[in-house]
Image (cartoon, rainbow, N blue to C red; front, side, top):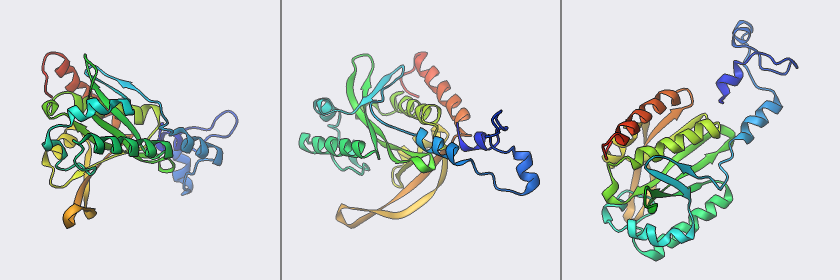
Length: 248
């Protein structure tokens, strides 16, 4: 459910519904939901642990300290960390510190991190998360994703995005999901574009990085009204992968 569908809903039998769009246009009024309905909308978006999501090729399970060893093994390629804001996490101590930081953010309600387990062995092969959770705006960012180098180009990345987008729009009631990537990371930009996300622009040099470099980020967005077509597109890709191709 999103604001648009509620704003255009007919009145309920109790007379508490929202004015129809035709009446609102005729009167020139701005359609604003009643206070109790607004509260329902804001509080619906929870993103509270534990959340687990399962697909054909992977499972997304709540990030936990016991995943440290498997994640450190998956993180061994330096190529993974070229554009990751968290920095190089190949060392167990750095990976452990990052896991602890994400769990603190989860407790604060701003992030919901996952470990990516690859089917059928269910070994940890990467991480992803919901972040920048903004409940009042019905908006969330999807990011922080990394995968073992040998799995780049596989079905794991699009399926993880499919599962998270479906959860955001169909379970949490999001109106908007954001994604962003380093302007230099053309591989990531192509992958996000293939999801069907809309490229919205570049935020220039807004993140200071070690060595005096300032990162520029490309922003993408998917609205709840766009989700059905994005969903169909992803389902078709994943169906093709299941039919016998390992890459999508």
